[in-house]
Image 1 (cartoon, rainbow, N blue to C red):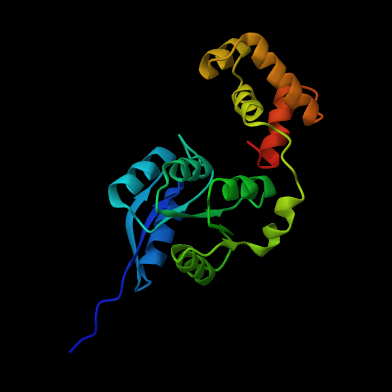
Image 2 (image 1 turned 135 degrees about the vertical axis):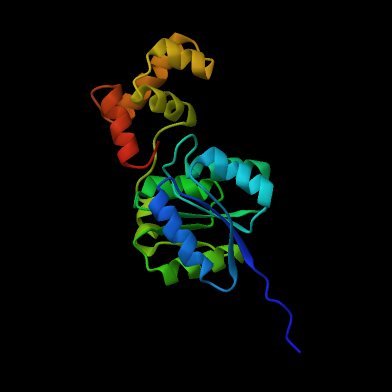
Length: 207
């Protein structure tokens, strides 16, 4: 007589690069206790898949179309979703890690880690444990993000080439308020202009 069926760890996989997404899905499906219930290519689809399937873990990249993995994690955290989040990325940026932790992310590992490490991290995150790539753990708290949330919102749009009037309309702010936020962000980042400020902030994982 066979024993009881083991509980499967249900995963939604979000990754915008098709080849990487397919490789991850294939490797994870080789694990006897892991089931990839959905595989998607952007942040909006990731949220929809979590809503539809209620997985144990969302395994997500950071930089994706529509919403980043950090945006998705923050939204799930805001909703009080029971789905845990594990970020797998090529970006070893301390700013990204800090934002991930603030968004309730339990795991943050790099894509060049062995698949065995990724699967081990997946199981730990599913069990409610925190897993952070060791090379980032110390550095994360050395680089303090000086930007406020509003400065970050304005700078992100400015870095995309949007004029002040469009930024103001998008964020429901006055033109003068947008100018003030941009001036403050440029000064904090010791940049010469908005484009340079946005570039520096992105480089450090603050946008």
